[in-house]
Image (tube, rainbow, N blue to C red; front, side):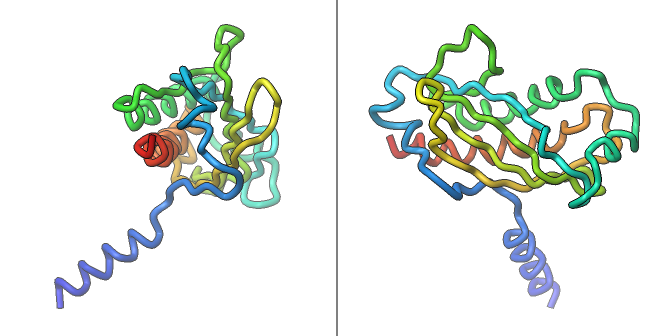
Length: 174
């Protein structure tokens, strides 16, 4: 009986596992001809569409606890760390968007909803910077912490792991 309960708990955790899934377009851009010579993807965070608990302003969530002034930048550092751990073996990494990053592709992480516990539902959009064409949309959901001074630290860690894992699957197919 105990084994059955443990198995059911395991299966429930697998079913409820967050993760990233491609919902539109293709990640073929990270393998094959269109990324020849590309070793990184520039990443930015866009919280302009973020709402709290489906219909409240995101500012209500921010007001729940003290926050660092530069929490967006600090949150992304955790994303880069985890994403790059996943893709390092394949000589591919994520980097902050700067004027020096002349890579062909950019990922824009757009959190859409934050729940009371700090978890997010979000999309990551991959754009071809030369044509401004959206080549892929990735959907993901993460857990979080509602009183972290680095507001999206935990969600960005988890997103880095999940998106890095998704990219790794495509990079393996090279």
